[in-house]
Amino acid sequence: MDYKDYYKVLGVERTANADEIKKAYRKLAMKYHPDRNQGNKQSEDRFKEINEAYEVLSDPQKRNRYDQLGDSYTTWQRGGAQGGFNWNDWINQAQQQSAAGRGGATYRVDTTGFEDLFGGGFSDFFNAIFGGSAGGMGRTTTRTTSSTAQTTRLDPRTVAAQGLEQRVSISLDEAFRGTQRIVQVDNRRLEVKIPPGANTGTRVRVAGGSNGIKQDIYLVIDVQPDSRFERKNDDLHTEIAIDLYTAVLGGQVSVGTLSGNVMLKIPAGTQPGQTFRLAGRGMPHLRNPQNFGDLFAKVKVSLPKNLSQKQRELFEQLAREK
Image (cartoon, rainbow, N blue to C red; front, side, top):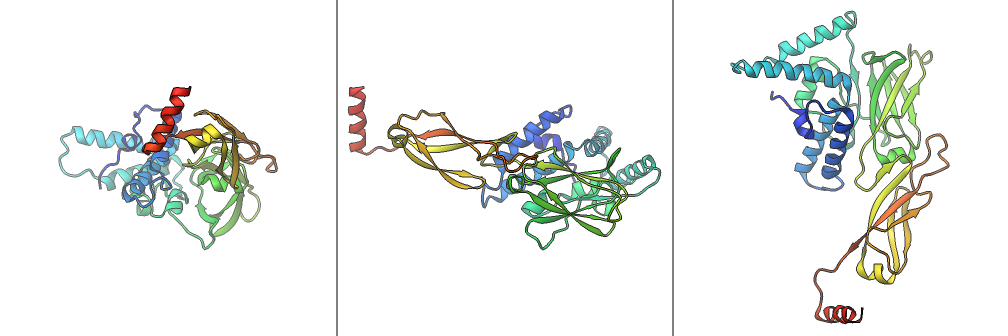
């Protein structure tokens, strides 16, 4: 099994902070998102690799364990790299240290996320270090028959002072409409509703003391980047392309929103980069989902590349009359 350099995957230094990692991830995720590269297997694989790297480096607990492995692997390389790196010894040692820190308890956390959305699981490297038969911080996929419900299985492993905490990835469309996840705890299946307007960092609480759950569970939401929109709080930003003639003479253009397409009136003389505000076409407010943010559409003017002789003569005539 080969070592995967997650820092290299995201193009950041090992000293990068959380904001730098997130910024690098979002830039790459936008570039290789399947919606922008439909049918491109290479881009799909790259997208999965990027998400796997972010899954590790954005989680302080996983990153700390990964960095420990990196130090051991580097030491082995500096020693002349005789023979293969003993993965099993490192994994077993890490498990023993982890169990000792928890008073000998053995736990796993199995979650769904990116692989449920795009198919396929994490790499053998990830599964060996964080899950699979090697144990560890575990991450496996459990699919349900519902198109909106995915199963997140949690056992007491990631323990915060206030209860269990686990990140859950959702799409921007799911954040807009609200969605649900099925949380499985000790063979109990609980349906957890994620409200409309959830944003990255939103915490959804499943109260303990009922349904046989001894302590609270918190699902920490991570809204995945969307190739169509950039989200800023409850507002969305997008680009719309219009041709030169519409920009000069005015007209209408269809603008995609999360609730369907709308027609936007383009006034004559619209300039490249001009932004139009579509009130109430953004994200719902988390605390009051009946109210919505706005959608800001920035105009991108497409200039004609191949002019006919007649069109060229007309443009030359306009140039003389300006």
